[in-house]
Length: 377
Ligand SMILES: *[C@@H]1O[C@H](CO)[C@@H](O)[C@H](O)[C@H]1NC(C)=O
Ligand SMILES: *[C@@H]1O[C@H](CO)[C@@H](O)[C@H](O)[C@H]1NC(C)=O
Image (cartoon, rainbow, N blue to C red; front, side, top):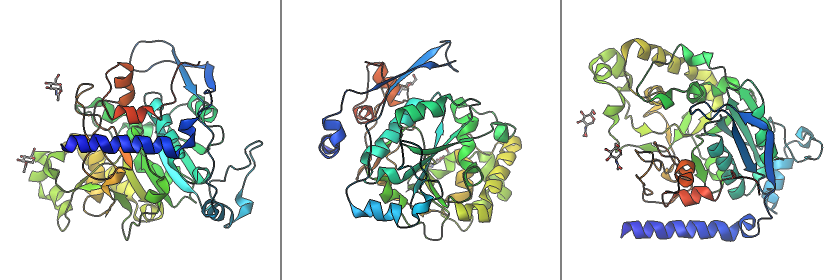
């Protein structure tokens, strides 16, 4: 019964998206971007040249409302920069911007593109959003592609040197969690422009079905980091018996009520992060892990060690996680009860892979509405 109600909700969301986003009603024939110059060596499988083919996003504009205008222009119109035919693009230090961070890599590119698209399509003031893309590519192919797909996007790309963490990562069972770029979220306070005081960090396997500015305005109180927390999850299992048996480690949680949270959606106060030197704290735990094996997963446990029980709990609607399921396919998950603003395909299955294989889960259809990948028409 509950499942039926949930599906009904989803249909409502889908219909809502179609009704309220004119772009879905009358999309002009998508302008195909055939990046003939863009062929890359696929990392994992043996396909030597993978031709990416994406469609251009529909144009996005701020809503016809003084709210967008006043927040964009009142502070300092001199901060506007003119990029030729895109005079609306804003400089990164403009105080009215919403700052978003995502990683950019070939493996999850399709997810990142869909996530960006979903954020723009559901934002009331999409031109007020600034994207910070962290990547480890030595060339500019991915940035060029993003520019082609979203011609008027406010964004900046930052190079994250994998060597920053390579000697701090221990070998673990789940290899994909050990990509150096997974650890970039620990270095945002130092990578990004110093004028950026708050960011929303998002994984590449999410889509939003709500206005990101609501999440942006969330109060963090005295905390440095905000994220939905899950106090019913068995917190013990995120650390090894070796960790729990040694007082010098486990006492880190004394006086705290630690709960699990997912590092795929975080609101971070970068001013406090820099002040309290959280990057160093997380690195110290990573160094302990190398010799002592205090946990099994990759980049998540050090965040739990530093922030669990010390962070601002954000409404669960902002991370409906686990939709990837435990298996690559055939393990469809349902939404958790309650409202939905962000869907997160954390877990092993990814919607684009299931869609391509012709066996999508019901919720993957929502993701597919934001997918811009496709052979050019
Ligand atoms: C929590 O996980 C630990 C380690 O996996 C296990 O020993 C314990 O029984 C679990 N507790 C509950 C309440 O499930
Ligand atoms: C997931 O895959 C494993 C191994 O193939 C299998 O044992 C398990 O039953 C699967 N679980 C689900 C829910 O499909």
